[in-house]
Amino acid sequence: MKAFLDTSALIDMLDGSQPAIAVIDKLAGECELCTSSINICELLRGVVGKEGERRGLRAICEIEANLAVMPFDAAAAQEAAKLYAALCAKGKPVSEADYLIAGVCAANGIRQIVTQNKKHFCDMPCFEKIITY
Image (cartoon, rainbow, N blue to C red; front, side):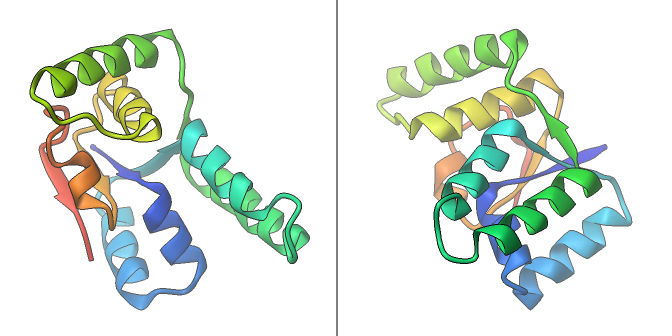
């Protein structure tokens, strides 16, 4: 089984949030932890060209070395488009990054996500479990 770490969980982990670290550590003992290239991009967007860039880049490299990083590929694009259409039909559109991330999860059979932004993912049928802390 895999657990997907959303950007909010990654940021909280990097910031030393004890609740985030406790949840992530527990999951690490139970399943494979992963994220996506989209989440890595969101992290990079927060450090590139900013004070502390070098330190931030080192931390992101460490994340990449310790997590499976799922790509946004053609299968993810198809799943993301389906999710987007379904959510719009229900009158519940979400941000582009969130349905792209959910598309990566759906394409890779990942049914649980760790996030502090539960409302971003709660209407997406691809997730059986949304883990917050």
